[in-house]
Image (cartoon, rainbow, N blue to C red):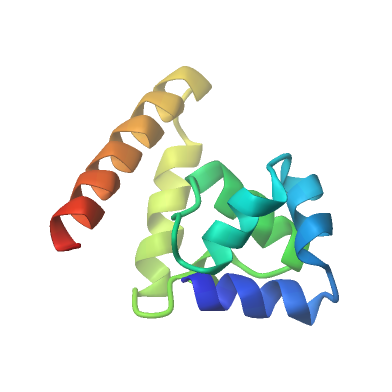
Length: 102
């Protein structure tokens, strides 16, 4: 994912600092995302998608784009409070999965 984020940013001729500012995060946090040290939260990934004019599914190279779009569609139907709850749950699951696989 991180390589695709880097490619998408470069395709728009945006510097790391500019991208970080647009995302509302520090440059170092953004550099960590591009280097694969951090995995972006879903809300950041959505912003990266908007800024780079790439569909969110673009960043899931090995995943089925239809699955990603389906998941995003289901989440978008939820009330914001409930959607936030699920997002936190997904992030926690993914953090544990990444820790387990390291």
